[in-house]
Length: 415
Image (cartoon, rainbow, N blue to C red):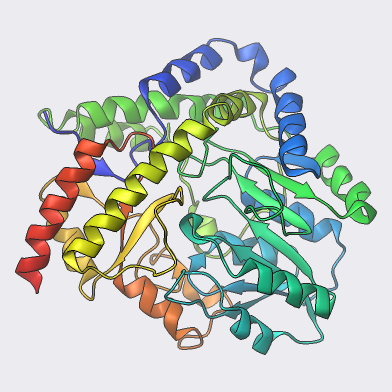
């Protein structure tokens, strides 16, 4: 029975991850509090050489940071076109304004020259995301921030380097944001962290964490049921459609917590931030210990996709090398939506939310994002043409080969 190829059906949920989630599920006295949270804090502090603050999600980490800095109303935070609505939502929740800089087709990240053009006297920070793990022009951005006396925030939710060093992702920012969501570099199902190298502002950031609320037991339980739900649905997806039934029943019963709530899609983010549950820290630590193995797997698939793309003359960001442990591998096709629709007939689901619009996903209320249509043309082109291939831990080399074979057949049909 062929299992679906996907971006979102429990991308980290291997049998080992599922077993670990069951062990955590059976220890409810450890769900809210325990040793794992402080162990994770210590691990991140040693790895990134900065003080670490833990929250319920990456976006909550950003909100806590912006509030701790006590920025004036309307202060400008520069982000890139081709991003997720979670970033402008966090900026707006802190009373600030999101300003967009165009990205480049070479790396899907903000263009340093475009960033410089939108800096004003109200600019307080540049938030640099390394999209899908492709390094941004971080050296140029670091120099620009130093010159203009602006804070640099690095978002490394998509790729965490297993090695430490001055030239690795996460080593340039005044602050570094990590997310432990279900599809990120490593997953605790939920959670986020903020690494600070700005010792003068850390008392306020610590206060934000101290004042954060605990997630309810029911919410934590739903998070811990996520691995089992998606493992079953994935294994049974094409067995008389039982997998589809499992997912539908889980959604009807509200067992699954959406990545973006309806309110967030409408531009509203709650001002309340939460503590990282110890249960999510336990899963995150389990994944952290396997980070070298996870990154090695991603590098193998990145190299395979890159070689295949070159052989078939498919367009992809030119800065991608085979050494990168990409969260996903982006290709560019003018009719990307047609490819995705055709691939669904083969149980291949490549809709990942990063398609169709400069601020993703496409089913949000775009009027609340501060984004002006046409202001970031390369970001808009990227979003229209992108077709990303999975590299997550449950994506095997055999499935990758099947994906490339089918994609090659379709590309000759659509040409």
